[in-house]
Structure formats: C-alpha cells, structure tokens
Image 1 (cartoon, helix red, strand yellow):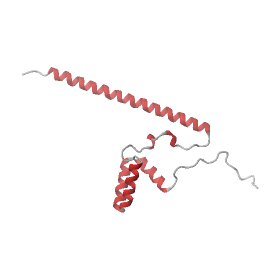
Image 2 (cartoon, rainbow, N blue to C red):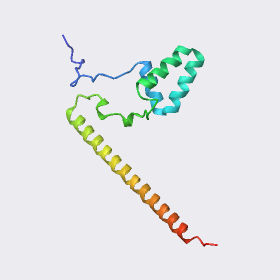
Image 3 (cartoon, rainbow, N blue to C red):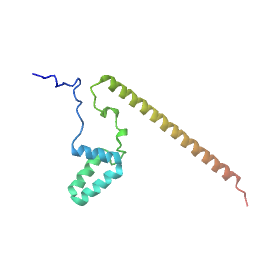
Image 4 (cartoon, rainbow, N blue to C red):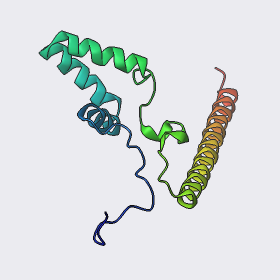
Amino acid sequence: MHSASQTIPAYPMAPTRGTGPLSRARDWLDERGKPAWIVAMILGFVLFWPVGLAILAYMIWSKRMFSCSKRAHMPRHYAASTGNSAFDAYREETLKRLEDEHREFMDFLQKLREAKDKAEFDQFMEQRDIKPEN
C-alpha cells in the first residue's frame, strides 16, 4: 500500500538518449567541433591504434569527418519528448521560427557578399578601362 509521503509523477520520465560515458564523450567532442575529433583520433592512434581506427571509422560513418558536427545542424526531431505536449509544441514552433530566421539571415549575408563582389568587379572593370595608353 502507498503511504501519503510517496508520490507518483504525473508524467513518465522521457527516455534519455545516450547518458553513458561514450555518449557524454561524443557530446563533449561535438561541442568543441571537428578539431577536437581530430585530436581525439590522433591520440587514439598514438595510445592504441585500434582506438584511433575506431574513432576514424565513427567519424566517417557519422559524417563528422566531412561536415560540421555541431548539433545545431542536426534535424529537429532529435530532441526527446518531455511528456508535456503543450511545451513540446511550443519548443517545436520556437525551433522552427529560429531555423527560419537563421535561413533568412544566411540568405541576406549571401546577397551582401554578391553585392560586394559585383561592386568590386565593376570597380576593377572601370579602372581597367581608364588605363592610360603609352
């Protein structure tokens, strides 16, 4: 029989993704980026070559070798449900809005780069046409 001091949580705990030491190490390396992965791989080869080989294979398999490994670039569906549907909906909407703003900002920066490149090219062409002939 349950006593009054025991409580049962209203929401079940969400399954935690990767709480072991390898998952923590992966997350720690991901926070520091590709250079940290490369250093870990080199240290693995120096200490015991199969460890370095395993890290290299994992980097290739997970595409950390060829692209940015920051978690921000991963698909939004990697976050586990909290069990609170209102919060989950709010989080998804906020993440979508932030992704849209990021994409718009990156497009804006690209347009600025293109405008700068065009202005520099036009200036070059103008100076090339003005050269005095001897």
